[in-house]
Length: 62
Image 1 (cartoon, one colour):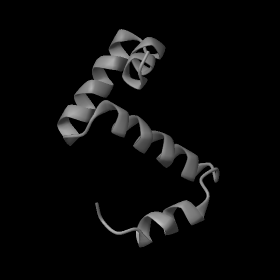
Image 2 (image 1 turned 180 degrees about the horizontal axis):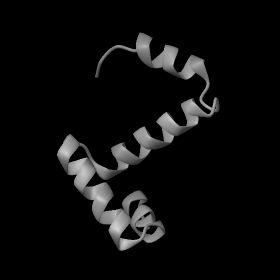
Image 3 (image 1 turned 90 degrees about the vertical axis):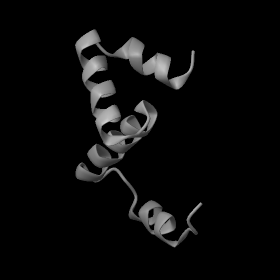
Image 4 (image 1 turned 180 degrees about the vertical axis):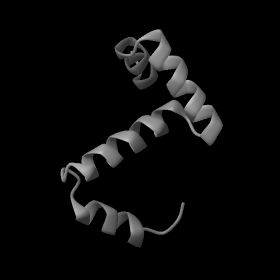
């Protein structure tokens, strides 16, 4: 089972359709949307280490 299948299995059909619509509107993959939402929520709760964002900022663009 891949990441997308696991997300779909964990969500209700309504939640899945909403997530797919958001991802499509934003022009990103469902997995990217999920990672973005997790990061945002973790940051708001103080669970996201600041050094991770610092490392991302100093990495050369791919």
